[in-house]
Image (cartoon, one colour):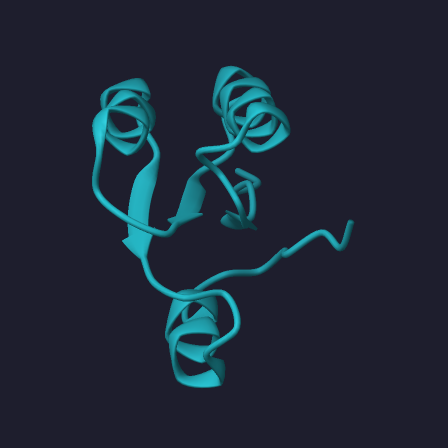
Length: 76
């Protein structure tokens, strides 16, 4: 059986990011949601089924760690 790739969504707690995470989860994709901090928005994503990664998108070390085990990271 085909396993769907894990997708990294950056700025996941924002308006567009939240919509993308929600849609991908509904389609059965495993999603890692990259957020700046743990808060109510990131908790909502976690409750929906996303894996939460807290970090600074402009820190190359954080970005590298967020990509471990990810097969897709769409550019916007």
